[in-house]
Image (cartoon, rainbow, N blue to C red; front, side, top):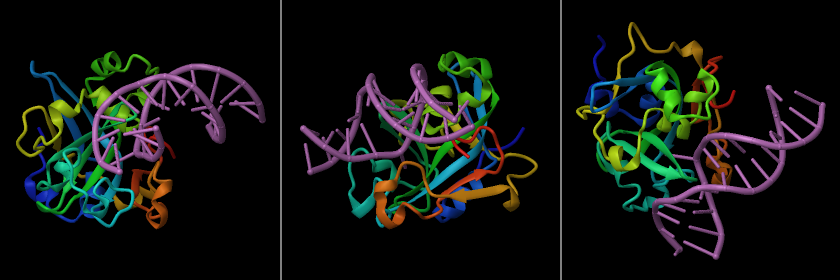
Length: 202
DNA sequence: CCTCTGATCTTCT
DNA sequence: GAAGATCAGAGGG
């Protein structure tokens, strides 16, 4: 069995962590021990107080974005248009940077995912978006915001063996839905596994 | 396959 | 009261 990613994985700079998450396995464990999981195939980096697209732009700290300021390895879960979204906080405490997990390739617990996402017609509909994957894995703000992915019991990330994703397999482009962010809108901070059919958009 | 539009609901002003 | 780090369905190619 593969091990969880340690604290030292998360306490590096944000773009390094964001890229390194590609290929790793996000795992949700139910109280009864049932696992749902998927390989991370699409992510975006959000870069702290200078990034106009980030919730922490300008250093605004609030109850909503508190998790962003915690140590790398903390989960930041927020609600947008009625859907949950999961971020993996990076770097050290006090530096509010994170990776938004945008898509997974489902691996374990497919039947449970379909049960939680009744609208899905095929595997590629299950986790191909930040709101979809949270629904599929039952990731919610009340349960998972501020959770520690290094030590927590119900949500964590396992190192994919034998390795993650090679540099040649990674594509990059502008982040989704941040056209309002002026010069930050065009920066290539979205990364995905090239050709994978589970990414939210090519 | 693609683009467009309405539903949705928390957060902060 | 307005603005989103979104989703799903409709309609056209």
